[in-house]
Image (cartoon, rainbow, N blue to C red; front, top):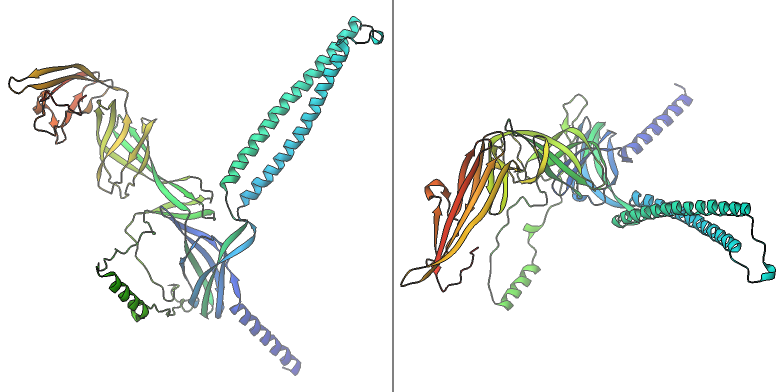
Length: 555
């Protein structure tokens, strides 16, 4: 190798080394995308993913444009690959961009401006049409009103001229009035659009310029290689709630509970083609039970002195160390893949919760509108019966006592009810754990007719020495099964519960052995009605009390 070649080789080696050093220490903007989201009842955890080729040395990786309201303490970095590296620091920095915070605001303002321009054009056209209308009216007045000066009077038009004049006026004024009507409709439509856009604008409150969080991840790379880095952060503005469609086949006595989740989010990021997980946990709640501190009662002056002495001393037990321990990526391309470790990280165990992993990719835009996601379908079988309480409502409500045999907990939420494919109303489900029995309300059925009548109410006086008043009620409850199947019907009513030994309540009919009576004096009949069967059930009771008493609670 001659001297010139050596010189060129040395320059090339130095330039290559310089380029390697710069690339190893320069900041890198990560091209990341949202891969998965876990939604909680009041927030969400978002996981972004990027793939990087790392050179030895100190690196700073930037994740740009993240939501401004993310919780900085929630930032977590993990990863795996062939590189050997240590995470040194993760930090979020708010950054204000030179763009409108909400692009929709600018769109609405532009639409309002364009519509106002259209409105101005329509107003100009309206002015012209009004002038034309006034002109036709002046022609009409000039040709039909007599002149005040007899010498200036013109001879009357001929019949042919009158016909032409009337035709000219009629055609002209008709066209003008027709155009005015059309114009008024267009102006009204434009005004409605402007008002609607103005209402939208009033609901969109945002700062003049958009603010985002730029997250920097500083690492030290010991050995070059590739890495898949995951950045996880928690954001408010997202929540989900369960909704159900309860579909009942009354002939086969089968129930399908279609379990769905309604998700809303306004986090500032659209979730496009993401893996979605729903959790019932509430990260806002502490996972550590509270601790009772000593309850000290002392003289006020002495307590203040002790507090002052305590604040003046420094207790090393309450100082938290900021020392971190370095961990590394896996060493070598052929070595097993290892998790990217986080120096000095602390792991907290959350509250016990249910988690639902949605088996398909989801798209949830950041528009705070409801998006329904199917969770699962739970088949249920149960014992069907009608419950009627005609004293309160002369309707028979179909209920099923079922058991949740699935592995899914049923969370409290509203349910749409469908009986034989027909929507019959809405109900509410209480929380039900797996293998737990519960009553499923399925709405009222017009094929079960119920009526409760007061047949007679009479008052009388009893007793010779101690005179008492007695009031007797006679009711008749009628139930008729219009369905083509045998049905179980549970009828409930009640008798008064006496709060005083001087007030005596008696059930006259039916006999107590024919019904169930609980401590609250609720009466229950368990009936079986054949198709078309009609049952009349008498209910008679009396209340006896001292005659000179005023009694509350009587009907």
